[in-house]
Image 1 (cartoon, helix red, strand yellow):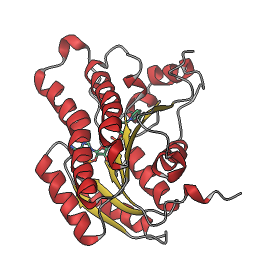
Image 2 (spheres, protein in one colour):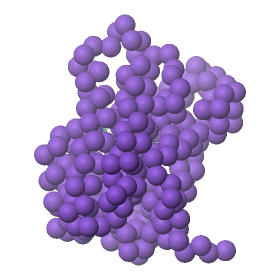
Image 3 (cartoon, protein in one colour):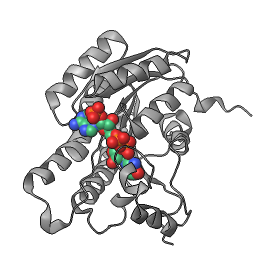
Length: 255
Ligand code: NDP
């Protein structure tokens, strides 16, 4: 069966944090769905090797250096993307960091670093994209990668969880502010996927025991995030706006 409204041909997707893990997988998945691709992160050497993989698809792809926590860096990256490819009409705000630590031990620098990356980063990129789309009178779809910890809390995850809850609520507010400009804003709340962020933990006995407590008794595969993101990026989801979609094997439901 083919359902052409899922196609992202003629669209251009920017993915932040594309140098590893989920962002890398989403860049490949969005390319497979037909979108031209702008990959963004700080580690350019990793982006260069991803560009070689993206060359397998019949799309255009470029890499831009971007620190999402620095508005000037975001603006420069958008300038380069527009010059070399196009203004993105799909934006995946995926860059993020974790700081698992007990609340009593988190210093202010760590707190600010997590908020600057996970929350201000989404703000900087979403605002830059939306301002340019509105000026160009173009529609768009912004997809924020939140977390299952945006929905529920977990011991030792106070600042990460709070930053992701802020992203989820920002998503709802941006949906209302940007709807009149034909820009939809949704979020995905992933459960647990093995990446640079957490692979050391999931190799430990404690990590393996934690997986056994999950309803699905397994981690997700990054490919399982691609379909939901393609759906939110594409025209099939024209009436989905302000949603925070869990992709977590039912962790948010309980166990
Ligand atoms: P990774 O550590 O593999 O990837 C994180 C990415 O974010 C890297 O590409 C890194 O690129 C980028 N990044 C970090 N800081 C910045 C910055 N200041 N500016 C630009 N890019 C930055 O982790 P994941 O793939 O797991 O995480 C991706 C997203 O998914 C995060 O938002 C995370 O919170 C979320 N998530 C992950 C889950 C999981 O189980 N893995 C669960 C729920 C949510 P570089 O260092 O090159 O700049």
